[in-house]
Length: 199
Image (cartoon, rainbow, N blue to C red):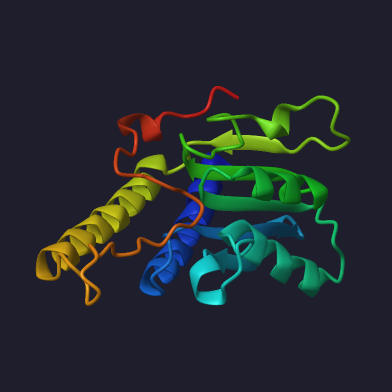
């Protein structure tokens, strides 16, 4: 797809990330696009759902992959491209390669768990039998801003809960839970998140 097409698809993924945020999940969204008669069409969408589904594998990419595979009745998706607002983790990167996706495009880089170059680059491992094209940094600042806002709000809620009830009913200090999804601590989300990958 063109750069404009990539940005359009990433905006759809950002819409999915907002759905995750509304559900109390880490705001990460994904869409899978396929060319039909030369026209890109959205095949499936997904957003982060590990907390609400009690499923550690329910990252946005995995949710979208499951929908696409069911729709096509095939676990191989070689004609599809995935757009996700956050760099895939190792679990998602391997799932995307197992699905034989043609291309993966992501927004913000993940300095804690990113498996497309930030921590490790699983997509660049020559011995693997499938190689997926990867592009990072598409609408990175918009994606990172959403994550920064989410975690800032969670930290503020945690501080407020601690001030209101510094010792819980049992006399022990209270620690409000902060939902953890694909990204762990994003309190210092890098300002360089808008920098495109060198690949």
